[in-house]
Image 1 (cartoon, rainbow, N blue to C red):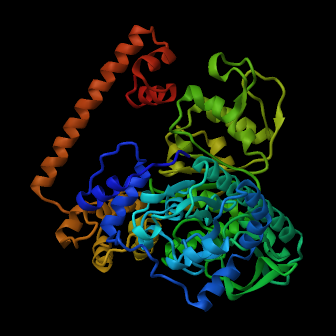
Image 2 (image 1 turned 135 degrees about the horizontal axis):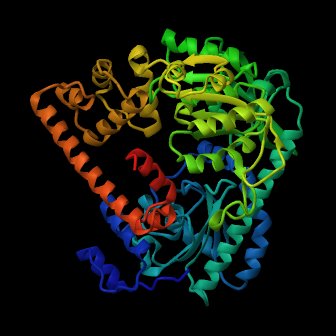
Length: 600
């Protein structure tokens, strides 16, 4: 909170030449001056031209009713700190509009001369560099005095401002002290303003928590959801609790795809102040009666998947999901969990093919203290134990080693797990959902999957269709991607039409990767159709094949180099994997995975 000292000569030089002689000025102040120059702020003016109409000012004042009351409770404390100094206290909203100006009558009169008044905007773009604008932009306290202001209208003033933030650490207002008189200690003034602003922020947070507790105690009207003023769901009507209970504490926007909500919101008041509101559910959407975090689209094949999710979620049957890589099998597994009676319990996921056999056992079953030496000597619960009362998703279960299949089968039969190094079985109640990217029945035929385990996990199979089987859903995926990335190309129709011709062997994952490339390559210009075809890997010519072959050769060469390095490290450390991993500057799990990959 060190204040800048800017001389008139320095200011004149910057206005005239765009450069500074003094290197002791903070980068925030210099950056602000440069932005003001780029934005065309007149340094010889600085009087706000943006002043709210009375009805809009009144609306903003009403919106910030709680902020006003919290500031009032702290105002006397601020006056005590700054006793004897003539100033005005200014409160702005998060956009820099002055909601309140109070202080010495003579100081208020001087403020009126530059329209530093209620309703005027005091942001950087409006009046140039000032304490309010800097606090708004950087969300931290600032002092700007004299020639530190970019525009002459403010240069007779000394100002200190600090941000006020809400319980999400989002800016809700700015507290500012301004005076045409020089204080004894600028840093003391700024520290005082910061302390009061922090006290207001803390009081806001406390009030929000108290409001939330009050909302949770209220009784819901029939078919009404109770929300806080910042649109967080606090309470659901009883008939929606089982199905949508996982939405408690989530933003109301997350329910848009689940429920049809009435546009009118009924305020909930305590002592005349709004602490939240009720929003009424008109009807449940019948077409997709399940919660699904991904894109559902309209294709018949995926609607059948949603119907199967809806049916099996109501039971406790073991589910096996199969489909190509990149089709969204984990999203299907999570949807089954979220729509089941276990929705409030843990959903734990593990990829059986990505973890070496030596680590998979401890990941699944956990271990007791002392079972291992080193970093894991304190013991840890495994995934099966962590998923107790909930759901365990075993992705790529077909890659699970035979010895692990036996251990898992025993757990599923006995409904209890014993940690490595332990002797006492721990009872568990876990729903198992498994997945493979191949037909697991073929794995049983090939004797890589035990038949007895197969019958335990293959209770209700769900096939997730490839993207090429649901091409009518591609526009919905593109729309989802554009909204998530705030990217709205004018040539969206061309993009959609071209992408429908893609082979999409990598499915949804490949589609999103292709959209990433489009967003990077064509941020503004419209690509040719030929360029889009190249991106979706259906442009087939000799040059493309040559490039791909060269890339494969280069990759093969790099792989061989990596194999040689791993062999040398293992030989050097007598096959002690932790030491070899440290020598190679990689984690043990990564080294185990590479050993498996290269079959060393």
